[in-house]
Amino acid sequence: MKYDCEACGPELGAYLLGDLDDEARAGIAAHLDGCAACRAELARDRALRDALGGLPVAACPADVSDRILAAVADEQAAGRRRDRRRAGYGMAAGLLAATVAGLLLLRPGGPLRGPAAGDYSPEQVAAARREMIETLTLTARVLDRTGRHTIVDVFSDQLPSAVEGSLRPLDDPTRGG
Amino acid sequence: MTHDTFNNLLSSHRDRVFTQALFNLRDRRDAEDVTQEAFLRLWRQGGHLPDDRVGPWLAHVTRNLCIDQCRRRSAARRHLGVADPEALDGLPVPAGGPDDPFAGLELDDRQRRLLDALQTLPDETRTVMLMHYGEGAKLADIAEGLGKSLSAVKVQVHRARLRLRLVLGGVEDAPGQRGMA
Image 1 (tube, each protein chain N blue to C red):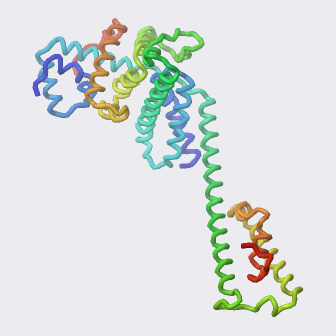
Image 2 (cartoon, rainbow over the protein chains, first blue to last red):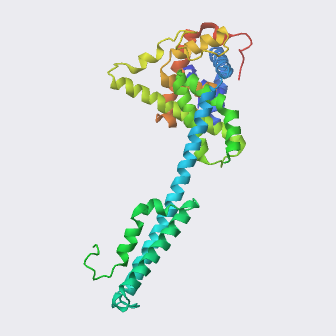
Image 3 (cartoon, each protein chain N blue to C red):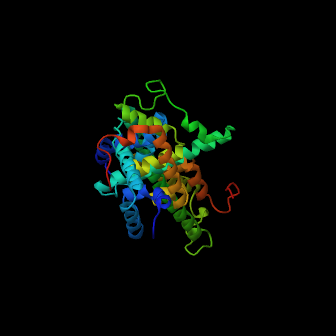
């Protein structure tokens, strides 16, 4: 491509910075060879580039660094909370699935029918229920204290009632649902 | 990325990032916010960059954040009913005054005149000039960041050069700066 002064002007900055394809660079170089005005223009561009590139560096205020580090720490803590919550939800989902599966399998008339409530004395049923609630609650608290799971966060203080509700016989009129 | 690694990168690059934002935005608070956001993005990036790519990566991110900030300023001014949002960009900020964004910088007369001249350009045009001439950014990359055509950015740069020359006078013709590419 053949360049005249008008076409050359807007390209000089890119020419100076090596930001042109081979064809454009060759065309501008050919024009510059024969044009003193555009050579002077290019020299001004170079001076402008050097002047802008030579501006001093400003010191970043110390409190900005502090803010950055604090924000990074916040993001880290939020990430850890998120990971724990995900682990807790996963565990809760697994526990819930196991409970539902167990209730379905062991329900009266189910494929793995266990003893009905009437096969034991009321005292035996109540003792078994308490033992199961205490075991689940204790397990959840231990897991929570290790910081590895948040199952107590998920269930909060509803855990005993939730478990107890699921243990009521299906024909119990006080059972929810 | 470990905290130590991040701390080292922060120490090495924070002044350069802050300066880039300060010259582009002419506002210390905006420059601080952009610096913070750029380094947060570096942290989120997770340390996958080789050391020698961190500087260019930060410059690219800072550039885009400055463009976004320029857009927000213009939008805010339009929202406030300013008829010509870019006209406010050229208002001079007195050197040494409480609002001087370059307070504390050691500038000679020539550099001060250059910064004053840059202040007369609209936000976006000033950012384009600093990116192209100061940082060596390719015009095609700048055009992509701005969502403009390459030819439009070339014209923008050309007009800004002519305008700077009027304001700068002798700055561009400083001794020892003439020559051919």
